[in-house]
Length: 532
Image (tube, rainbow, N blue to C red; front, side, top):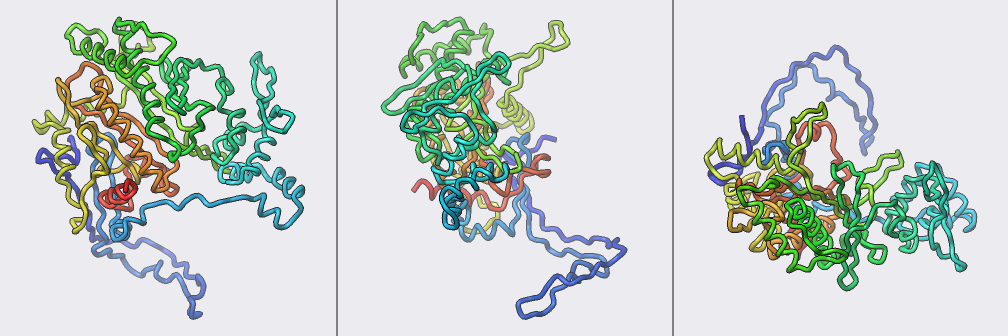
């Protein structure tokens, strides 16, 4: 059975569980004990944990079940007991700011400065990991940095580079503990000069070629080629240069975002154009906006022709913002410091590893959306995204209570930034392109003209600013795009997925069951407040 929360009537289907049930008591023994004392010294025991007979649960608090509009993304469950608290005050939907933390200063209150430094550097490694991730003291982070790698200093004690050694025939920096090194380098409070020499200078992290760049005012971004990539045929990473350090969303400007996205559009257009035989003549410089748009139009013209041989290529775009590492040795998010985005071209086919001429469709996440669109049309004889947009426009509160019901955070004539009715991350935000072109809805960046691309870039920046304003520091962003040359009514969709301290994913999420403690309408209120 095909099931989605979108209906042909342009409404969201929302289920509600209000269970009443009886549980057979099969317990053999009681283990009664005292738990402690109440504030008036009355004994607190565990008698209520050991009922004599069967247990009757009568009118349990409602739990709302909302299948994701895209069924492959699972189902959302909203506990009304938690959500009702936040409905009365959407301002509760936020994370506390990062506290100021300096162990070095605390030690300095109890012993001499030299002793404080010695204690700091002799801490057990798990504690140093935690300090590297959470300290806001530049002096403390500098001491930790100098303890985990070999730095070269100028006469005034300023670091000017790393010291290298030859290992296994390769030149490598001398790093005593890589995880500690990377965790320190990812901390925004480490002085910039240390960030630069440890991880930011071109080449300090390896031999990946720089094959593009973007310069505008104070913005400078490098495009690295990851040729030996886990993504077949390699992928690209747009990283801010060592001259333009960006660790936090508050530091990111509209020009910065335009630069990141320009490199993405440029690489996708040039790569596909070369496969189509268009062969752009530009070398050793960035394409202008006019050149980029002209190349896009050429690609679109070829891909819509019936004899196109490369009409089914797709794009891959993603952004891991934020880094964290626990004292127990778990990397909690991302593998790279600074703000950066990654992208690649996805082919249509992958060869059968058993040999022969057989081929299989190469995986692209957007293909799952295409399948939903196709199945929805067959099931309901209706357009999925058309009905989806009507459902968003006519949304009613999940709990049927009075109050604000809009899921929209921000929009213009080309894009819609909104809270999905069924979130797969507690704070998920989505971006949908609502613009159309000559052949139908804009489903990928090859169908997006300059105005639409500008709207997408603005919405992505606003989404990140909203989440950062609420306190999110770890956000994964992905794109669901339509393959080139297809005309199935699919719209370009992006999802922004924060990781929250209490919601990193467990057995529920592994089954596609996503547990929320708020109503999506109240989260939308909290998001809109961040744009005021």
